[in-house]
Image (cartoon, chains in turn purple, green):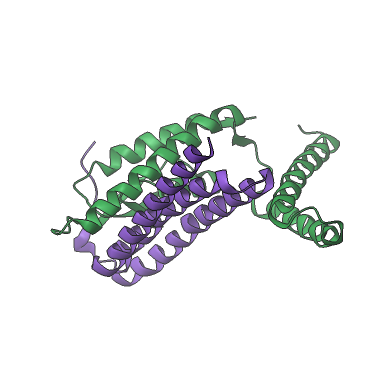
Length: 106
Length: 165
Protein backbone atom coordinates (compact mmCIF):
# COMPACT_ATOMS: atom_id res chain seq x y z
CA UNK A 1 0.00 0.00 0.00
CA UNK A 2 2.68 2.47 1.02
CA UNK A 3 4.71 1.46 -2.05
CA UNK A 4 1.72 2.33 -4.26
CA UNK A 5 1.39 5.71 -2.49
CA UNK A 6 5.12 6.35 -2.95
CA UNK A 7 4.83 5.56 -6.65
CA UNK A 8 1.94 8.03 -7.00
CA UNK A 9 4.08 10.65 -5.21
CA UNK A 10 7.10 10.05 -7.45
CA UNK A 11 5.05 10.11 -10.67
CA UNK A 12 3.08 13.26 -9.70
CA UNK A 13 6.13 15.22 -8.51
CA UNK A 14 8.15 14.23 -11.58
CA UNK A 15 5.28 15.36 -13.83
CA UNK A 16 5.01 18.60 -11.79
CA UNK A 17 8.73 19.27 -12.19
CA UNK A 18 8.37 18.67 -15.96
CA UNK A 19 5.71 21.41 -16.19
CA UNK A 20 7.85 23.83 -14.14
CA UNK A 21 10.69 23.09 -16.59
CA UNK A 22 8.39 23.62 -19.60
CA UNK A 23 7.14 26.92 -18.11
CA UNK A 24 10.73 28.09 -17.64
CA UNK A 25 11.63 27.08 -21.22
CA UNK A 26 8.60 29.11 -22.36
CA UNK A 27 9.75 32.07 -20.25
CA UNK A 28 13.10 31.96 -22.06
CA UNK A 29 11.83 31.20 -25.59
CA UNK A 30 8.56 33.16 -25.90
CA UNK A 31 8.96 36.54 -27.61
CA UNK A 32 7.34 39.13 -25.28
CA UNK A 33 5.87 39.87 -21.85
CA UNK A 34 2.33 38.73 -22.69
CA UNK A 35 3.28 35.37 -24.19
CA UNK A 36 5.72 34.73 -21.31
CA UNK A 37 2.87 35.38 -18.91
CA UNK A 38 0.99 32.43 -20.45
CA UNK A 39 4.03 30.19 -19.97
CA UNK A 40 4.45 31.14 -16.32
CA UNK A 41 0.84 31.15 -15.14
CA UNK A 42 -0.51 28.07 -16.94
CA UNK A 43 2.46 25.71 -16.83
CA UNK A 44 3.38 26.61 -13.23
CA UNK A 45 -0.22 26.28 -12.00
CA UNK A 46 -0.31 22.75 -13.32
CA UNK A 47 3.23 22.02 -12.06
CA UNK A 48 2.39 23.22 -8.55
CA UNK A 49 -0.91 21.28 -8.63
CA UNK A 50 0.91 18.05 -9.48
CA UNK A 51 3.59 18.62 -6.82
CA UNK A 52 0.86 19.22 -4.23
CA UNK A 53 -1.02 16.14 -5.43
CA UNK A 54 2.14 14.10 -4.94
CA UNK A 55 2.84 15.55 -1.47
CA UNK A 56 -0.67 15.27 0.01
CA UNK A 57 -0.45 11.47 0.62
CA UNK A 58 2.87 12.07 2.43
CA UNK A 59 1.56 14.90 4.62
CA UNK A 60 0.93 12.59 7.58
CA UNK A 61 -2.09 14.47 8.93
CA UNK A 62 -5.38 15.85 7.67
CA UNK A 63 -4.30 19.39 8.53
CA UNK A 64 -1.01 18.99 6.69
CA UNK A 65 -2.84 17.80 3.57
CA UNK A 66 -5.41 20.61 3.75
CA UNK A 67 -2.60 23.13 4.22
CA UNK A 68 -0.92 21.92 1.02
CA UNK A 69 -4.23 22.23 -0.87
CA UNK A 70 -4.67 25.76 0.56
CA UNK A 71 -1.19 26.71 -0.68
CA UNK A 72 -2.15 25.54 -4.15
CA UNK A 73 -5.56 27.31 -4.08
CA UNK A 74 -4.00 30.58 -2.88
CA UNK A 75 -1.26 30.39 -5.56
CA UNK A 76 -3.95 29.69 -8.20
CA UNK A 77 -6.03 32.65 -7.01
CA UNK A 78 -3.03 34.99 -6.83
CA UNK A 79 -1.88 33.83 -10.30
CA UNK A 80 -5.32 34.46 -11.81
CA UNK A 81 -5.39 38.01 -10.37
CA UNK A 82 -1.78 39.08 -10.88
CA UNK A 83 -1.57 37.72 -14.45
CA UNK A 84 -4.51 39.97 -15.40
CA UNK A 85 -2.87 43.01 -13.80
CA UNK A 86 0.45 42.37 -15.58
CA UNK A 87 -1.37 41.67 -18.89
CA UNK A 88 -3.31 44.94 -18.55
CA UNK A 89 -0.11 46.87 -17.94
CA UNK A 90 1.82 45.14 -20.74
CA UNK A 91 -0.95 45.46 -23.35
CA UNK A 92 -1.35 49.15 -22.49
CA UNK A 93 2.24 49.61 -23.60
CA UNK A 94 2.06 47.36 -26.64
CA UNK A 95 -1.60 47.57 -27.66
CA UNK A 96 -0.84 47.40 -31.38
CA UNK A 97 -4.20 47.75 -33.23
CA UNK A 98 -2.80 45.77 -36.18
CA UNK A 99 -2.46 42.76 -33.86
CA UNK A 100 -6.14 42.88 -32.94
CA UNK A 101 -8.55 40.19 -34.10
CA UNK A 102 -12.23 40.58 -33.46
CA UNK A 103 -12.80 36.87 -33.73
CA UNK A 104 -14.89 35.15 -36.38
CA UNK A 105 -18.26 36.72 -37.29
CA UNK A 106 -21.12 35.03 -35.42
CA UNK B 1 -36.75 41.99 1.70
CA UNK B 2 -37.77 45.64 2.21
CA UNK B 3 -37.86 45.21 5.99
CA UNK B 4 -34.60 46.71 7.38
CA UNK B 5 -34.34 44.16 10.23
CA UNK B 6 -34.60 41.35 7.63
CA UNK B 7 -31.78 42.93 5.65
CA UNK B 8 -29.66 43.28 8.81
CA UNK B 9 -30.32 39.67 9.76
CA UNK B 10 -29.30 38.53 6.29
CA UNK B 11 -26.11 40.60 6.46
CA UNK B 12 -25.24 39.15 9.88
CA UNK B 13 -25.87 35.60 8.62
CA UNK B 14 -23.55 36.19 5.66
CA UNK B 15 -20.91 37.82 7.89
CA UNK B 16 -21.03 34.87 10.31
CA UNK B 17 -20.76 32.31 7.49
CA UNK B 18 -17.75 34.12 6.03
CA UNK B 19 -16.09 34.50 9.45
CA UNK B 20 -16.48 30.75 10.13
CA UNK B 21 -14.98 29.89 6.73
CA UNK B 22 -12.06 32.29 7.31
CA UNK B 23 -11.49 30.91 10.83
CA UNK B 24 -11.28 27.37 9.41
CA UNK B 25 -8.76 28.65 6.81
CA UNK B 26 -6.72 30.26 9.61
CA UNK B 27 -6.75 27.07 11.70
CA UNK B 28 -5.59 25.02 8.69
CA UNK B 29 -2.78 27.45 7.81
CA UNK B 30 -1.57 28.50 11.28
CA UNK B 31 -2.53 25.58 13.51
CA UNK B 32 -4.74 25.42 16.58
CA UNK B 33 -2.22 26.54 19.24
CA UNK B 34 -4.18 28.52 21.87
CA UNK B 35 -1.44 31.15 22.13
CA UNK B 36 -1.88 31.97 18.43
CA UNK B 37 -5.67 32.24 18.61
CA UNK B 38 -5.93 35.97 19.55
CA UNK B 39 -3.94 36.91 16.44
CA UNK B 40 -6.17 34.58 14.43
CA UNK B 41 -9.36 36.18 15.74
CA UNK B 42 -8.09 39.69 14.88
CA UNK B 43 -7.12 38.46 11.38
CA UNK B 44 -10.50 36.76 10.88
CA UNK B 45 -12.41 39.91 11.94
CA UNK B 46 -10.32 42.13 9.65
CA UNK B 47 -10.70 39.69 6.75
CA UNK B 48 -14.48 39.42 7.26
CA UNK B 49 -14.92 43.22 7.25
CA UNK B 50 -12.69 43.49 4.15
CA UNK B 51 -14.59 40.72 2.36
CA UNK B 52 -17.97 42.38 3.07
CA UNK B 53 -16.62 45.65 1.70
CA UNK B 54 -15.03 44.22 -1.42
CA UNK B 55 -17.73 41.63 -2.12
CA UNK B 56 -20.98 43.00 -0.66
CA UNK B 57 -23.87 40.63 -0.04
CA UNK B 58 -25.74 40.76 -3.35
CA UNK B 59 -28.88 39.24 -4.81
CA UNK B 60 -26.98 36.56 -6.71
CA UNK B 61 -24.42 34.02 -5.63
CA UNK B 62 -22.84 30.81 -6.78
CA UNK B 63 -25.02 27.80 -6.15
CA UNK B 64 -23.07 25.34 -3.93
CA UNK B 65 -24.60 22.37 -5.79
CA UNK B 66 -23.49 23.65 -9.18
CA UNK B 67 -20.09 24.83 -7.91
CA UNK B 68 -18.71 21.26 -8.00
CA UNK B 69 -19.21 20.68 -11.74
CA UNK B 70 -17.95 24.22 -12.44
CA UNK B 71 -14.79 23.61 -10.38
CA UNK B 72 -14.20 20.27 -12.15
CA UNK B 73 -14.69 21.94 -15.52
CA UNK B 74 -12.07 24.61 -14.76
CA UNK B 75 -9.71 22.08 -13.19
CA UNK B 76 -9.84 20.14 -16.46
CA UNK B 77 -9.31 23.38 -18.43
CA UNK B 78 -6.29 24.37 -16.37
CA UNK B 79 -4.72 20.93 -16.96
CA UNK B 80 -5.37 21.35 -20.70
CA UNK B 81 -3.90 24.88 -20.51
CA UNK B 82 -0.70 23.65 -18.85
CA UNK B 83 -0.25 20.87 -21.42
CA UNK B 84 -0.96 23.31 -24.28
CA UNK B 85 1.59 25.88 -23.17
CA UNK B 86 4.20 23.21 -22.32
CA UNK B 87 3.83 21.72 -25.82
CA UNK B 88 4.22 25.15 -27.44
CA UNK B 89 7.27 26.01 -25.32
CA UNK B 90 9.06 22.72 -26.02
CA UNK B 91 8.20 22.42 -29.75
CA UNK B 92 11.34 23.37 -31.73
CA UNK B 93 9.16 25.30 -34.24
CA UNK B 94 7.68 27.44 -31.39
CA UNK B 95 4.08 27.34 -32.73
CA UNK B 96 2.74 30.73 -31.58
CA UNK B 97 0.37 33.13 -33.30
CA UNK B 98 -0.12 35.69 -30.54
CA UNK B 99 -2.66 38.47 -30.74
CA UNK B 100 -5.69 40.01 -29.11
CA UNK B 101 -9.29 38.82 -29.28
CA UNK B 102 -12.15 41.07 -28.14
CA UNK B 103 -15.07 39.29 -26.48
CA UNK B 104 -18.45 40.85 -25.68
CA UNK B 105 -19.34 39.67 -22.20
CA UNK B 106 -22.93 39.73 -20.91
CA UNK B 107 -22.03 39.95 -17.20
CA UNK B 108 -22.32 43.54 -15.90
CA UNK B 109 -19.31 45.23 -14.28
CA UNK B 110 -18.80 43.73 -10.83
CA UNK B 111 -18.11 40.44 -9.13
CA UNK B 112 -19.70 38.20 -11.81
CA UNK B 113 -17.54 39.70 -14.54
CA UNK B 114 -14.45 39.57 -12.32
CA UNK B 115 -15.14 35.90 -11.61
CA UNK B 116 -15.52 35.27 -15.34
CA UNK B 117 -12.20 37.04 -16.07
CA UNK B 118 -10.42 35.11 -13.30
CA UNK B 119 -11.82 31.74 -14.44
CA UNK B 120 -11.06 32.37 -18.11
CA UNK B 121 -7.47 33.28 -17.22
CA UNK B 122 -7.10 29.52 -16.56
CA UNK B 123 -8.25 28.55 -20.07
CA UNK B 124 -5.72 27.24 -22.62
CA UNK B 125 -4.08 30.11 -24.49
CA UNK B 126 -6.02 33.10 -23.11
CA UNK B 127 -5.22 35.79 -20.52
CA UNK B 128 -7.63 38.71 -19.94
CA UNK B 129 -5.66 41.86 -20.76
CA UNK B 130 -8.13 44.68 -20.18
CA UNK B 131 -11.63 45.81 -21.07
CA UNK B 132 -13.32 48.22 -23.43
CA UNK B 133 -16.75 49.02 -22.04
CA UNK B 134 -18.79 45.81 -22.12
CA UNK B 135 -16.04 43.92 -23.94
CA UNK B 136 -13.11 42.04 -22.47
CA UNK B 137 -9.81 42.03 -24.35
CA UNK B 138 -7.98 38.71 -24.28
CA UNK B 139 -4.39 38.11 -25.18
CA UNK B 140 -4.16 34.76 -26.99
CA UNK B 141 -1.20 32.51 -27.74
CA UNK B 142 -2.82 31.34 -30.96
CA UNK B 143 -5.54 33.47 -32.55
CA UNK B 144 -6.36 30.62 -34.96
CA UNK B 145 -7.93 28.71 -32.05
CA UNK B 146 -11.76 29.08 -31.69
CA UNK B 147 -11.29 31.47 -28.76
CA UNK B 148 -14.64 33.29 -28.98
CA UNK B 149 -16.77 30.12 -29.05
CA UNK B 150 -14.74 28.68 -26.15
CA UNK B 151 -15.28 31.84 -24.09
CA UNK B 152 -19.02 31.72 -24.90
CA UNK B 153 -19.18 28.14 -23.61
CA UNK B 154 -17.44 29.13 -20.35
CA UNK B 155 -19.76 32.11 -19.93
CA UNK B 156 -22.80 29.83 -20.29
CA UNK B 157 -21.34 27.41 -17.71
CA UNK B 158 -20.72 30.21 -15.19
CA UNK B 159 -24.14 31.78 -15.77
CA UNK B 160 -25.71 28.36 -15.12
CA UNK B 161 -23.95 28.18 -11.72
CA UNK B 162 -25.03 31.65 -10.53
CA UNK B 163 -28.24 31.59 -8.53
CA UNK B 164 -30.39 34.67 -8.14
CA UNK B 165 -32.17 34.92 -4.80
